[in-house]
Image (cartoon, rainbow, N blue to C red; front, side, top):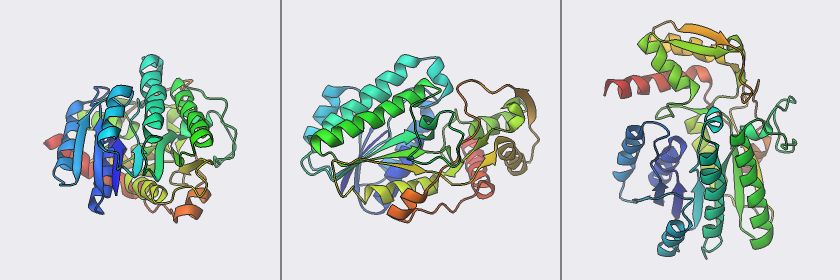
Length: 323
């Protein structure tokens, strides 16, 4: 199959593209290579993908409707889309809100418009986020929970994507699945994420800030488990293309952030210098995914606890830092 992967030089996009290529699919990769974080990391991921004969790269912004339209016109045999391009980061949405609306809302709309013009499209899978659950306190989070009280603009843009996808499924019979990711981590990860920035600070002997003394709880999900869930979902389009799907994809296990720090200290062989601060208003106290729905659909069963995933990340991080 020929699969379009947007955000292919990003953390999750890179791993998804690599897994698709490994199983013999052709991948049309798209990325804007923006400078939200170190572009050298994105280029290094891209270099690894370019070593595969079935990979083709297009440097474009998915919110550019003319460029995206031209791309799908040239590749009208695309049968699947994994749309992962987005402006990520909950706290950064307080700094540059316009970037989130442009990338996440306009970008998603452009992908929807392009997708409905592909004659052989079987399935569009796109990234949503656990952040849509806002300040919900019923645990674990279930897809049937209300999600109309976002606590960040980032979450609001992703909820807008879900609603637009619902409209396009209803209007055009566009087969779609939205995946609500829960705190993805692992090798080749994003430097703005806590586990990555903590590792850099610990190695440098710099302090890290733990909100509420590290008692915030997260459903940390290892990248290999995430990729398995994405591909499993992609391979199973909705039976009724007019009824879109929304699925949680997480580890179904909650860990305190201070446990993450302890595991980083252990793997790095250094103690962290810790400062405590109150939890910011855009951060929720806890996330916890019910994965019954994606498990029933795909057999998804995450196998990587934080105690296994963090040492794997640190092994990659040390190699990356040394290079």
